[in-house]
Image 1 (cartoon, one colour):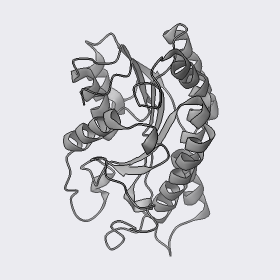
Image 2: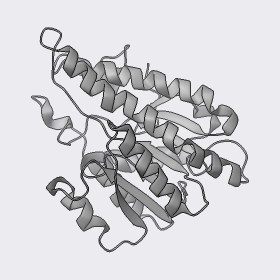
Image 3: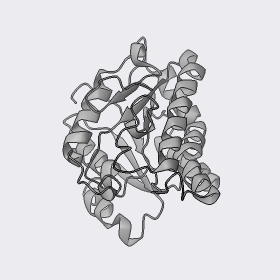
Image 4: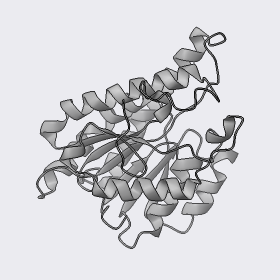
Length: 259
């Protein structure tokens, strides 16, 4: 994890689960970011109390309202981040916010598919578009050659459940719309890696494992991986990524996951 030296980081969905733990572990680092933007849909609501408690004593963290399903919310957040960075770029954007619908092949509805897709695919697309100028700025201002998550990167938190090859845990939960959305997010990641390569912005999809979060525990069997272990692995992996990994799909341990 010591290899990750991003000066500024933004994490969506920071009020619980993987997002909250990522903010916590970033704050534990000896070379922690100078600025962390922890975003969620309702920063003042009861669901964000743990986040508020965590950042109360850390002036380098700012909690921002950002609903990935609301374009105006994303635009307002990007303007605030730009203002707070005072001319500097954003090194690392972690598109973590997502929702889960347990609809099956027989029960899923058009409304359910659209809702999940809006948050899990369109949201990361819109967020990446909004913060792209700041990511480009970070890449341009960094003298090091090549790509890294310390320089400029988009990290999309995906799932092996969206792997067409593996279809992880199908026997436990179908979650049709969620799987389709993560497969689409993987394609978005690949497209971003090609579109932003010239700007030296690293784009990667990460499977965090089957984690003990509200979402991860929605299946009938308890998830085997703790949030602490998952996030520690993710941050360690991010610190080792370079241009050779651009556009790939890896798990929390850095191992390639089949599309």
